[in-house]
Amino acid sequence: MAPPHGDKSAEVKEEAAAAVSSVDNRPISTILFIVEALPLVKKFQLTEDLNSVFPKGVPWVRFYGNYKGLTVNIVCPGKDPALGVDGVGTVSASLVTYASVQALKPDLIINAGTAGGFGAKGASIGDVFISSEVAFHDRRIPIPVFDIYGVGSRKAFATPNLLKELNLKVGKLSTGDSLDMSPMDEASIIANDATIKDMEGAAVAYVADLLKVPAIFVKAVTDIVDGDKPTPEEFLENLVAVTAALDQTATQVVDYISGKCLVEL
Image (cartoon, rainbow, N blue to C red; front, side, top):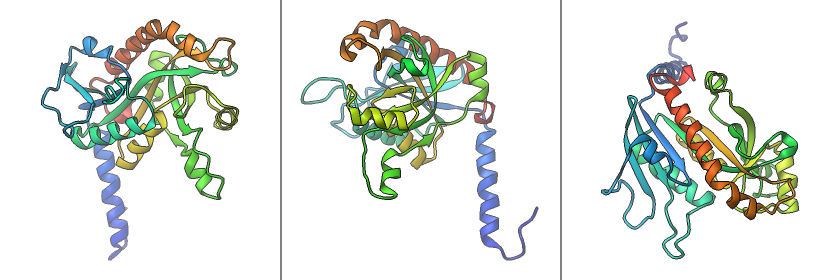
């Protein structure tokens, strides 16, 4: 239906809707993986970017190449310059995501990584989840409206056909900057109705939402948070095997995406 004569706002809305529809119906061309580690580099036969697209001095590492008609970029935070440990957490994740989207213009973001799972919500070691929704559990701001902002709940990009094809589990993801879980964090995670918890997902979602890039979250369970083993011990014990499961599922996700449009996922 044509907008009423002289209704510029309606015209703008129609043009915007047409642009979105055009993008949704265009085959996915460029994928951006935001990851903690790099097992997928060999799987996709990617090359390290030695002439970095990122600012000089940052530790972020990018691998890139073509796989089944897709331009695949894998970016990880790299090592902390001072301490040499992996750059985990929400600050690194948000910075890397922002810089990568600006430089690489992806059609889709995939945040692939490990997570703690809750046995009470049906999670087991080695399970791979697609997150339906993400939120923070350690940004407590007990002031009206700021409290909602702190939680920062966001829907992940919906992929019903992908879920059906790969028969993956679905659960809500809660993000915080600590590996352990304090009683206050636990209460927030329960309020978030989360099945899994990690240290970067909601930060990636925040940036993806700001920049209007669809994002999906693929998380493999390394430890049962509400189980009887200490989290660091169980995480390290299962890391290698669970990373292999994540590698396999992430490859299946990309195989499914190849040749499809966003609306087909």
